[in-house]
Length: 382
Image: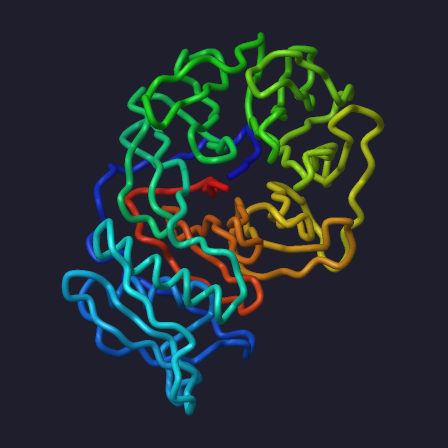
């Protein structure tokens, strides 16, 4: 979702759908906290959606099963969830409206609420950057990569898509005017867009606060790339940092009171600052060493995910107050799902980048459906 603003993707490929990519699964069983289930009675799209969704949160088809998922999809999806050895189902429901895919997502959401006590994510949206010809574009899709829509067609470089709360609009950085790096606001319902920040110099990495009232971004109008905040309509601009260092990658605390960002003076480190201003304070990180970039604060406020490394990148998670960090998986650009459990991130595969889903407690990693070429910088609508 957030990258160092000096990085521009090279080796860009043509944009076409990769047939069958949804079925490409990469799973790493590093912990034993998986839930084995059986799935019977479903066919075609309903069955594949259920298996994909549940595996994202560490629920896999395996014997012996702890839970039995059964039903049918003849006209509409009907399903039940039953604990093995218990005759009475936990629930039995039918799903109307929408298509088979949306009904299967709804059923999977209900299963997850019972088995993981997790908020639903299977009917959410993501935004990301995708390569196309000699340029890059912003794309929006379902969380699993299905139903992609390319929003921009500017034949220009773009980066760092970020959602407004509620998912009605995006902010992103664009080189559309060639020699100027600007931030645009894009309304998804109407397709209309407007300039959000176009100050002299660099304008990039905009992030709207969870309460929807403020935006954080990086501007170089005063010389060095520094952290600024403004109202969500772009007004009342205020500079928060005043250094010659290179600031980047701001993200908000869940209560919209603090901003975590990257400060680079030699090695990149994480700092925090009040959204009202003040002195930045270092974030103490132990257990890992290297350049710390691309932080993302979990929606429940408890954790911060970030990228570590340069060249060989890994996803790490630590307590939001700092402390011991856990290195989870190879990748970069982490972004939390609304459930504060799942992370979408970028993984490098030879000359291309793909988007993957990580279930943090079980360390399950699964590819979403990909567009051919390179996909990166994912942002999850919350």
